[in-house]
Length: 271
Image (tube, rainbow, N blue to C red; front, side, top):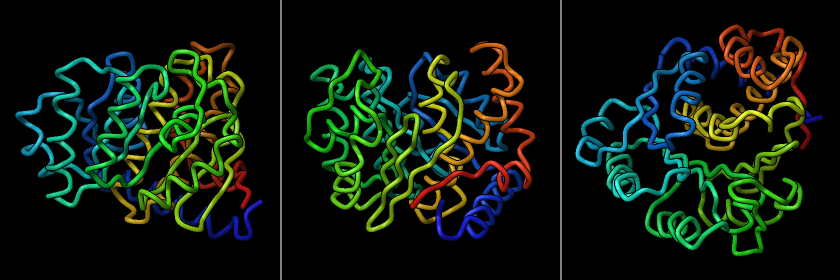
């Protein structure tokens, strides 16, 4: 486990309390498969979601947003057209941007788009599965649609390189989550084997990165906190669920009810 689990728990609990107290707006350009899922997760943890892909309103919405999430799950033209203006507006407002390169490596469009966005903009956190992160780092990221065929540990070295190159935190989600930023690196364990059976939980992790980024200016701490909360909530939900359907319901309940004892008892982080 990490050298200072008590200190890490304190940091996460501090940020969780800040999310619930401040109710930060998380603006998401996300895919239509997960809009309801991620909005409900943000509400459950205490944030305030706005889901939009209207380019003309991005600057106005950014004026009161705490974070911007750009999720590439839907690459329809109107979604793509909103991403760069939203990022420019976020930079102008000092709002952190979380990028989820859904399906990078699965098609030319899904590969070229996040690379182009990263080439001209600065991310706060990039979160993806192992195949997506390998692709962004210029390595081979074999995919099965938008699912990864690689394990998160396979992408750990590339994730660290990408984090240093982009000057951001990088999260590789999987059975074990890898979180990298600069010289910092952590492995987050826990969760449930049922979680990959529920669509949108990877996107939910990205949304929660947005909630934590809205209250913590350190990208590594924000990403690590979001990953820990995801794993803890998944573990809590699995203890009550009878399958994927009820896991999703209990996952929202876990985010809503999560307290000090849950974090301290279930925290599993390795340096």
